[in-house]
Every structure is written in structure tokens, then in C-alpha cells.
Image 1 (cartoon, rainbow, N blue to C red):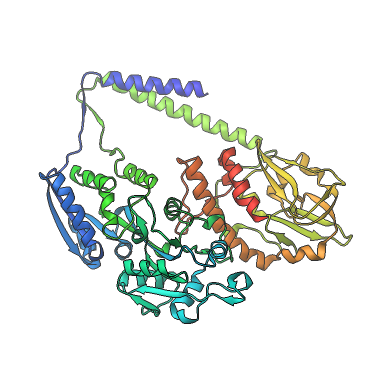
Image 2 (cartoon, rainbow, N blue to C red):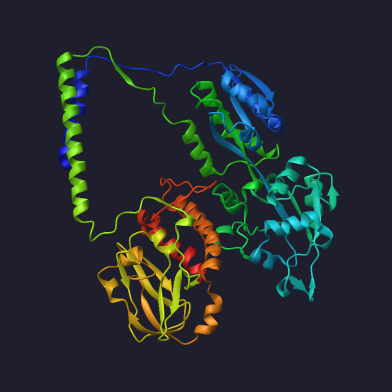
Amino acid sequence: MKTRIILIIGILLLSFNLANSKEIGVVKNESGKGSLTIFTSADLYSLTTKWVNEYSKLNPGIKMQLIMTSEMDIQHLLTKTSAVGLISDESLAAVKNVPSWNMVIGRDVIVPVMNQSNPLKNQIFKFGITAEQFGQLLTNPKNWKWGVGPENQINNKPVAAHYYFVNEPSIISRVSNFVHEKNTNPTGIKVLSEFEMISAIQKDPCGIGFCRLNSLTDQKNQSLTANISLVPIDKNGNGRIDYSEAIYENLEQFSRGVWIGKYPMALSGKIYSLSSLKPKNESEISFLNWVLTDGQQYLASNGFTSLVLSERKSQLAKINEPPASFTTIPTETNPVFKIIFLILIALGLTTLALDLISRRIRNKNTAKSAIPTLLSAFKEADVLVPQGLYFDKTHTWAFLKKDGLVKIGIDDFLQHVTGPITRIEFKNIGETIKKGDHLFTIVQKGKQLKIYSPVTGKIAEQNKELLTHAGLLNNSPFADGWIYMVEPTNWLLEIQFMNMAEKYSNWLKAEYTRLKDFFESAVRVHVPAFIMVLQDGGVLRDGILAELGPEVWEDFQTKFIDTSK
């Protein structure tokens, strides 16, 4: 069938060339060369002025007009004029109901910082600080301490913090949004500038404050300023800095983490290029290409952060996609060839339709023995969490039967991630296992995951039905898809480390966020062409691992499954 389709396509292309062989022309995009109108919001006026001035020096033949506008006037400019806007998040939100095109060209990142020699640095990097704790710092800095508990004390005394702040509205506004605090008048040690604040914290081991990332950056070495460290944020509020939040070791790691959404969005503003339609004018496209390349150097001198290289490339691809209006135009067509061409098109479409019908018939015939490919969205609400079971962080469940044996299986969350499971590798009956030990392996077409035991005990029974019907793990994970019966030896102690339905459901919310963070990171590394919407409320595909290769499964094992033990 494939050979037939390829042959038909070849004939179609040949007939098209024959029908149009007399003369071929190309329609070129007409561009209004020589003029460019730029509008900008007040908070970006200084940066935009710098961009316009520098670009004008390089291109003296282009007449450039710069307009500073209010958020209300942006709507008018989008609908009434042909212009390119350079605006911030706040301005973009004001025109969200107006049809428009935009792309990211820079960032305005606010970060919490501390002294590199903070006496509790190791604990801070282990546990992080939540938005709620930062909120307490802003409202009551005199009584705020660097964490609580014995591990966050020195000589059995909590360590006080000294909060420094700059009275800059844009920073105060973003930090207030981050901590969900409307108070715009912070208290603490007021300094005149970000430079003065950084200098003070460099000398104060207990100092802490918020400033722009660019203010901390040594542009020459692309590293953080000496004796200054970023403060890790416990974004999901689970009391630790886990894989999805570990982005604070160096500037490169942090910048990439901001790009893929591992940093709180309230502190990570974006700078956009905005227009009513995707720019087609040659002057507009050239200017935006320059902003994304040589123009990035001017972000730092104006207090903003440039895009990481990978993001620049993705935005350049976005602006430089070949326009659909480029096409070939026949100047003269032979009517006989035209009729033949139309007949061949009809024949090709008919063949393709018959092929689709035959494929559907074959799929129906094999539906009984195969699990259908999961292509729908996977949302938190889709996960089944039955009452009466104990759930472990290894994505397994346990249930104590009346005869004293514990039934074990995988949770619904994990099967939503893996997609159709084709085989399971058991341990032998009679083997003794400990909580956290490798208990069994699930396999999908050669790709595999090791799953760990939620309990300690001796394996008393295997679910033999899974040897021939591994799909039961997907279709019935809590009933027919159970895996082992185990004779427990430490049941009462170990269930204290497990959760039942309500608490487990709450834990899964953070786990779903961690899952999204993992795939956003792993896919960009291993499969950059794979498209997923993961930020701003985006959802994952059901059975997403089934679409990815063994290298992603290995990453999922070490960076997601293993870290939950």
C-alpha cells in the first residue's frame, strides 16, 4: 500500500510539472522598505530607545518612529496602525482580548539573594523557602528567622535574617504578587539602589533581599557576583528542594530553569514583541532578528535579562518561518494536462481513503488483544484514588487482607504516564523484600521502569494473569491488575509513611507539577522537536512515555521514580 501511495504522489508531481513546464514565476512578498514604527510601554521606554538608536546607526537608510504609549492606547495602535510593539507582561495582559501576534524577546527576572557564607546555606539549599515564608519576611522582618527546627539553628538558637529592600515599584509589585501580599510598603533595611543592597548583603552573612537577576550578573564571566548566592524557592511547598526545583547551583542552570518554567512565574516577567499580525514587512522582520541576536546585549545595561541561546533560536524560527504567500504561478497551462492532473488527484484521494478504511478494519480486529493508544489529555482529575488503600510515594498501593497478606499494585497515576504496559518482570515467590527495594519491572516494547516496594515482607503469591495480560495494569490497576500478595513483617510501622485517599490526592497535585517539570526538561534535551504545552495551565498527553524513547525512560527512572523512594 505504501508503495502504491508513493507512486501516485510521484505521478501527481510529474503531471504538475508537465502541466506548468512552459514558464514558472515566483511571487515575492512585497515589503515596505525604509520605514518602521515602534511603540512601547513606559516601563520599557529606556530599553526600546536604546534598541532604536543602535539599530538606526547600523541602518541609516531606515526611517524609524518611536511612540511611547499607555496600555489603553496599545489596543488602538494594534487595530488602526501597522506597527511593532515592545511591551511587558502587564501591558500584554491589558490587550489579551484583542487578536494579536507576539513573541518573547527578553526577560525581567526578580530573584531572592543571600550571602554566600550564610551559616545555614546547606539547609536552605536542601529545604528551600516557600512563598508563604517569604510573605512573613516582608510583613514582619524583625521576627523572621532562617527556617525552623533543630537543623536550622546554630548553638540551639534560630538565626535571624536582615531584610534589605529597594523602593522600586516594579520589584515591589512582583514580589508582592509572588507572596500574595497586597502590602506595597515593605519594612526592613531600606537602601537606595540594587547595587547598594547587593553590597550590603555581601558584607552581611544573614542578609537577604530581592533584586533583578541582571544586577547580580558578572557580564564578562557570565556568573553571579562574588559572595552572593540565589535563595532556592520551594515552589510546590512540599518542604524540600526536589528535582523539579533544583536550578540554583549556577547562572546557566538557573537561566534554563526560568525558561522551562521551573521558577515562579510571578517573579519571571517577559518582554514581548507585539503586532496585530505576524510581521511580513522586511524592515520589521530584520529589526526583530537583530533584537534577538546582537540587540540582546543591551538588555543587561537596562536592567533586564537576555534569553538563553536555545530560546533565542526558537524565537528566531518563529519570526523567520517561510510565509505561506510564496508560491509558484503558471503563466500558461495546457488544458489536456490539466484534466489529467485533476483525474490523478481524484485517484490519489480515493486510494488514500481506501487505505484509511482498511486500517480501521484491521485495528478493530486486533482491539481485543491490544490496548488502544492513549492520545487524550492527562489531567490531575483523571487519576483514580480509591478509598481504603494505602498509597506510597513509589506510586504503589498496599491493602491488608483479612488473612494477613498485603496485596500490592501500581497506582493509576503511573499507568497514565507509561501508557500501555506490555510485560511485567516478577521476583520469585518466597523472596524476601524490604521497603524501598526493587520489587518488579514494568516493560513497554523493551523500555522499562523498576518499581520499588512499599512494604517489607516475603512474597507469597504472584498475579499469574499478568503474564499473558499485562494490560490489566492499565485497565484495572486496583482490582484485576494487582501484582503480589506479600506476607508483611513491619506493617504497622510502614503504613505511617503512606497516605490514604484524601492526603494522597493532595500529594498528587505536587507530583503532577513535578511530572510536568520533568517532561519539559527531559524532552527539550532528548527530543527538541516534540511539542508539549506544559505551562500556564497546559496539560500532558495521556500515556506520554509511550511516545518517547528509552533515553527519556532512563531519565524518568533516575530523576522521577528513584527520587521518590
